[in-house]
Image (cartoon, rainbow, N blue to C red; front, side, top):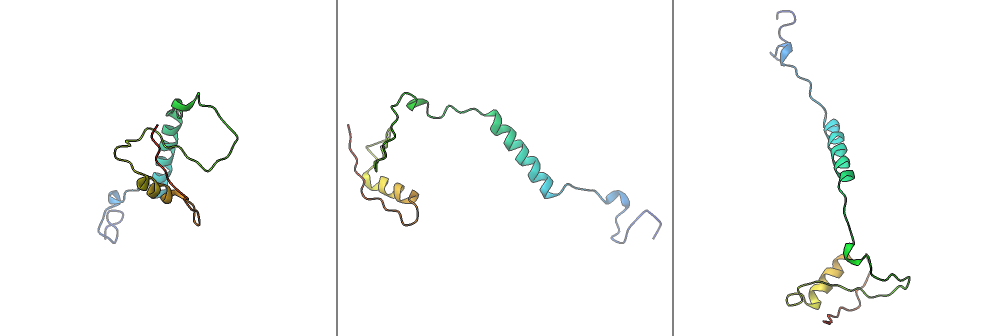
Length: 98
């Protein structure tokens, strides 16, 4: 073996390339996502800004702006059951069209 030209793997010194670790890539991705998140501005709740607020707690939930020709109470029951906490219960679902 000539000095400095090849190592035991048969690759020359120029063949050894340093690469960044996965952690560095993850840090870069997180920095990019954080920067993008800070740049994006959402106007969440623009449709209900003028809605009256109340401190009263109820067991009711209004679902609005649905395709009621296709959406049935059993569909809402399946949806609500998927979000309930462990041990939670959905007592009833009623679809009232006004």
